[in-house]
Length: 317
Ligand SMILES: Nc1ncnc2c1ncn2[C@@H]1O[C@H](COP(=O)(O)OP(=O)(O)OP(=O)(O)O)[C@@H](O)[C@H]1O
Ligand SMILES: [Mg+2]
Image 1 (cartoon, protein in one colour):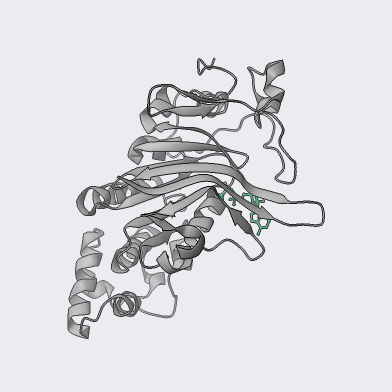
Image 2: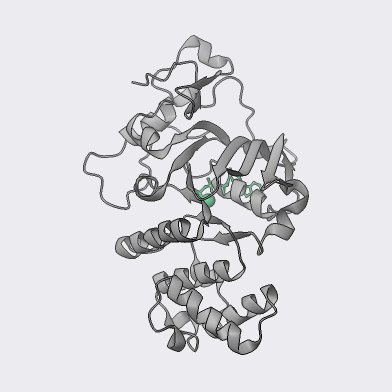
């Protein structure tokens, strides 16, 4: 069942030199109980898409969409009230998400108190259970600790425990393992996978890292310059990408990819967000560019569950 459905999302900032298009046209459809990857180079609009879903786009941002729906509710009006209730953010920097001057116990309790009418003793039991569910050992002792006494991986688990404490069933994980070392990052990914399986959570996994997509994503959407250019099963995108941009991202990775490898650089740069795009956004960097690429590319489908935007039929070189 579809939990999140977005069609033609745009996030635009008015400026003196014309509109800054942080997100131009993003489509997302995410099934309940799945992990959906959002992939693309720096600046392509991943975080801004997540912020729009959370009702946290910066002041001045103009958000528009043909469809912008979470569990049947219109996010245009409900995003802010769903945040911290149904939708939670797991960011790259867990230390910044935690209050440095309050103990873990106090911070867990603050969340639980807001979300339930349980008496204090029961909230403590709930806090211990949630910390245990995120794989933290010695939860009783942990309640007395301050964030700086925890490693980055432990802090990220506490942030996830807090998200669970709100009752959120949709997590937006924005590069959740980027600041962690490889082994710890892999453990946090395994935890998210386990929570999806056991609790039916749904995750939007924002990442640069194809290893993350391979490790945990069911499906994925590739963004380029604020546009969804390919969407399909994660495995199909990793092994048989249809859009030349997705193919270039993968081809540019060295064969022996060190674990935790970020997206390899492709020659050239994404178009500036102030630059209007006519035709295909990737044409300037595309190894398969043809004269027709100056016209808007058609949507294409390979099977029922894989789509991309290109003048080519998906037999990317
Ligand atoms: N407050 C803002 N005002 C205007 N433009 C912004 C603002 N914040 C971000 N942008 C622009 O929006 C575009 C998308 O940024 P975003 O942070 O979503 O990219 P990203 O894909 O998350 O990149 P990264 O991988 O580096 O995190 C960029 O061009 C960025 O410069
Ligand atoms: Mg980002």
